[in-house]
Image: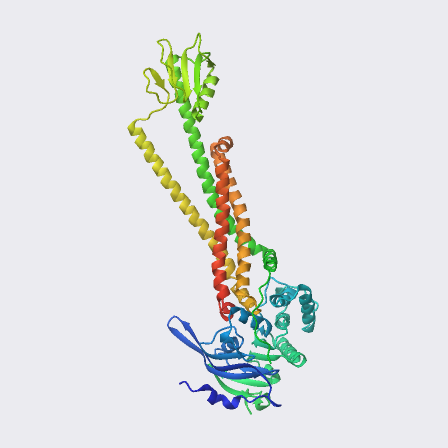
Amino acid sequence: MNQPATAQYENLFKPPAQGEPACVIRAVDVKKVYRMGSVETHALRGATLDVYKGEYLSIMGPSGSGKSTLFNMIGALDKPTSGKVYIDQVDIAQLNHNELAWLRCRKIGYIFQTFNLIQVMTCLENVTLPMSFAGLDDETARDKAVYLLRLVGLGHRLLHKPAELSGGQQQRLAIARALANSPEIILADEPTGNLDLKTGEEMIELLAALKEKLGVTIVSATHDLKMLKRSDRILWIEDGRIVRMARPSEVDFNSGEFR
Amino acid sequence: MPQAVQEQVRLPFAIAVGVVLQGIRIRLGRSLVTITGVVLGLAFLMSILTGQMIKTGVRAEAELRTDVRRMVNTMSSEIGPLKDRRIHLVQEGELEVREYRLLEALRREGVHFVGAGEGVTAVLVVGTAEPPTPESTRLVFTTRVSAREGVRSLQYQPSAEELAIQQQREREARTRTVWILAVSLLVTVIGISNAMLMSVTERFREIGTMKCLGALSAFIREIFFIESSIIGLVGGLVGSMAGALVAIVVYGLSFGLGRVWEAISWGTLGGYFFVSVLAGLVLSVVAAIYPAQFASRMVPAHALRANV
């Protein structure tokens, strides 16, 4: 049952094209078991992957395949049952609570399917909050938040509450918030899952543009075919295992299968 | 070379206070519901405490009146109508309340208190004064117990049977009071814990989000500590005041506001108020800090998934 994961998937981890880009996230044989009483659920059965600096990686898979679990593991939001996760060459299992908070604050920006905005705060405050956590002074934080909100097209909604925004606008706000501390990595868990087709496309364009403009690394769990087209690499996960990795050019988007 | 991981800085206390005040203001409706939970719990406790105090006071006053009336009746049955009687008053030491009230009552009846001399019908000894030897023509009354021959004691001496009944009644009353207080305290604890627990658990997701954005567990605990202190203090003050007021008004309606007002011991009431506000503060903080601690220690992924 338990095959050595690294050997099996070795051919999948070829870096994208030119040279040897730095590896910002590395997961090695990550397993996650959820226990509910006597029932054990194997959400991840040994996932190994590298994410390279500046790439746009999509994690694809049906619901219940372990996408979100993998997302939580590489985002330092949950601890693996076994295996290692390195972010910027640091083993996150070695970090204490305060160092993990620092890591989540500065290195990673999170985008969720359900937006997870703080409903009682305005757009501006939602974006300045992570900067306050990073110790930035109020004025600088406000100026940067205004810049970021303009960047995602919410310059005219600074003092609105999330509930007063449309779904697409809320996700734009979440993207602005994710960018607050200029992270190297953006982790997006089904960012278009709660959006209609058109706003979903806009979101994809926005993320792709940010990748080009700011050079951030984007890892996105999705089953939105349009997101796959814009990504540099696509990774398939099924039943807690990474089963395939491919470039968009190798995929037939009409069927979602390999050419 | 990647930037080394550092420890997240701790935010100044003032920022936490700011976040809390803003949160309370924005969530005003929800905050009011939580505060109302605290207010109701403490109002209940405080009204029970105040009510007990008023009832005890009113009962003591009624007993005092009966006692004084009995003493006056005893005297008038011995020496006839009291109007314009001259009574020699012998007084020494501190007087008890019932002695003051007896003197007042006698004066109202028309008794003249005089020194030793002509036309004195009787001698009344109050306080710690030693009763004189009764002469054949005069009666000597004392408000306290006296072993001296011929001295009439006005102190009510219940029979053994009466005493037993009275003690039994007092024991029962004490048990009832303790029981009522225990129940009201329990109601208060449950009411406040429930209100605070709800207000924290419904924000698990928010806590998870904050942790994703880089909030320290300590910061989250700090926010809930400040918030629950404010809610506990405000709820405690309002609830205690409301409880005392309700008890005074309700008992005032049945006993008469004047009698209730007289029965209130302001020192005791102040003590109850202090204890009640303190209870509100401590209960709120304890009830909020435990789930906040739990939430702040949760892995962010779990806190984000939490559906309450």
